[in-house]
Image (cartoon, rainbow, N blue to C red; front, side, top):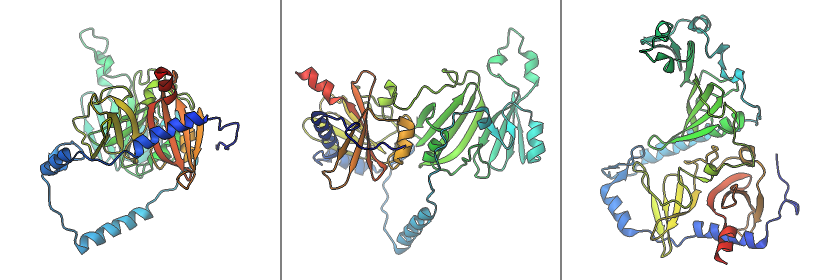
Length: 391
């Protein structure tokens, strides 16, 4: 789907476009004055551990010819592994999506043994057993505890809701989902194949994201790190989705919490995560911009109230899973037609902006595109609303 630029679509007023430009310039072109004292302190403490955010001793590293050659080889290797984007499927989640190699959740373990052969390893527990094959694990609820579920002094029925296979766990590339996704695939291809996730969770300490899709009592979780799928889990869970598996996130209709980025909200006072460390800080007398891994927070200088949030690389994603570098068709699949559009050619190349409003029009999300790719993602207050308040 593509939106042709024409008078009927480009109905942005000059005043609104100007205010948006001011917001972007204030974010992207702040005077590069780095807090020297803080930077000096961090250098003294050493490097920052990417997983825990704790400081570790600094190490002097010399670039040798061997190191340079290794780096070049690594870059060449990565270039060979560049994946192509899959076609957008656009299908709603269905029961067949919870089937792997003709095995359905809830079936007996005998069926999977008949198809895959004897498990490489079996781990027995009182309530559940685990069957392990290469890159594939199945969790099965035992029958024995069900004998006791009617006892008033036990509450096992809340811990065990289903018999048979209740969970598939995939961490090898040799197992493929019904829609053709496997470990190693791009995050963006998951979105293009399965659509908008029901929920996106961020494990900041491990630098991982969970793209979650639900259908009634069934759930698929794609765990993503460094922009690639590292594992896939399918499970049966009692009341797994509060909305009965119906995805309330619809293109063109953004929920209020979708105007948050990295868990931060416009108007809140900045309280940094204890496990995350900033990489750069830009300041002026009125405001500060704190750059973390993949996202940045612009706050008022004195009170530290959040004014603007933006992403500057693909290490952070939005509430719908979008990241910088994604294709415009992926953005349109997830977010639908924008409320307004703007085209800027002042930099010498065409930069298109898709602008989305919150339900109360207080906040806006802007997706920037250059050469059909996401070039920036920004969330801030609606400048028109602020202007009306100041009059």
